[in-house]
Image 1 (tube, rainbow, N blue to C red):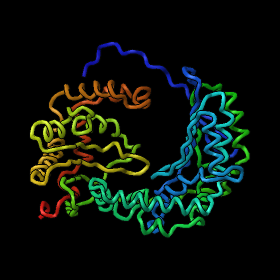
Image 2 (cartoon, rainbow, N blue to C red):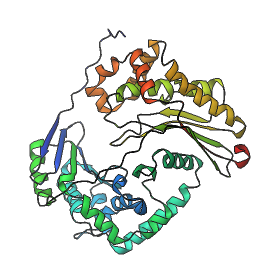
Image 3 (cartoon, rainbow, N blue to C red):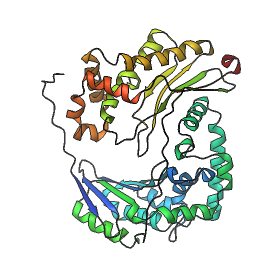
Image 4 (cartoon, rainbow, N blue to C red):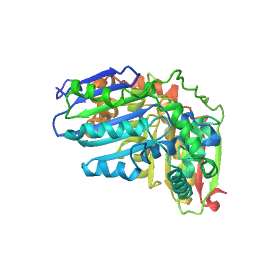
Amino acid sequence: MQHSQKRAARPKLDVERVELSNGLVLLLSENHSIPSVSINAIVKTGSRFEPDKKAGLASIAGALLDSGTTARTSREIAETIEASGGQLGTFGDYQSSGVVVTLLSKDLDLGLDVASDLLMNPTFPEDKVHQHIDRRVAQIKARLDVPRTQASDTFNEIVFKRTPQHHPPIGYEDTVKTLTRADVASYFRSYFVPDNTMLAIVGDIDKSEVSRKVEAAFGKWERASTFEPPPVPQPGRQTSPIEKFVPANKEQVNIIIGHLGIARKNPDYYRLLVMDTILGSSPGFTSRIPRILRDEQGLAYTTFSNITSSAGLDPGRFIAYIGTAPENLTRAIAGLRGEIARIVREPVTDEAQIAEFLLEAEVYGLGFDYLEKYPDLIRAVTVEDLSRVARTHIDPENMTTVVVGPADALK
């Protein structure tokens, strides 16, 4: 593949990494274009460490970080940030939890004070825990009424078997209802320690000055005496096809086909990123699956496929999705399976399709990893590479097919 045109120079992302004495990892990057700063604290824990019987615990613990501390009530936390014109968010998902604060750079000290308070001193008031659990149960019930979500959850339960990924981070109604403040506090004590935390601060800052400020704000956070995250069980790839039909009182049929995917560190990740765009993840309906099933055959309201978007610390999933009318069910399944088989059998016959990926990447952007570190790697992807990774990571003969839709259509 020839790329003789000159490419515009991309700004170098200058990142400084500092490890505090208590093990907290600090990542700093200066950007003086606007007078603001973003403080992102990530704790390396999430639902991948929670047992099935406590599904939803990590998500709830993360969400409750701003429910009150030894120094501030939840209202005082919110009013402190709002008064500065800033924004605050807390979260807990599958593989990380944490706090995000964005505010003017002149208020950096305030942001560090609030972030450190939430990470070091949350009290998880009993009434706030109960209120959040009640809201979470309502969210879970509403979520179950969405057929595409039903299809996704059912697919995960089959493909990920009894590993943590098989349950949604939001949890189940029956597990969430049993959670207590003691569960939340115990989970927090186990994982929210400085030597399991990363803090990224980006914006209108002076790196050396910020390092001192972070040491002052977080330095008293005590390192865990013995912190070792438990091993996370890993699912294996299925060795036979599986089909699951779920009746739902909806007009549309939702279909997901696929199998276990890859972890983010897989050496083929960037080759598969190119394959994703060619097969089904292009934002502009130029990929094979959207172009053929939606544009040419008129089968789909929505359709896509990908293997890289869910890649994380643990293997994600390879999926192809289509939402269609019940009368198109058989043709839609055959169409998805046919295009999946074709990417393995006849991966790419023209380098123009790879060139199209590069144009998409330029237009839509793929994050600083692409822009900074991997442009040459991606530009070096060949049709032979795509053939190999498709054969290696896609198994058309052993896929899970989940269909959610009207009972009459599933007969």
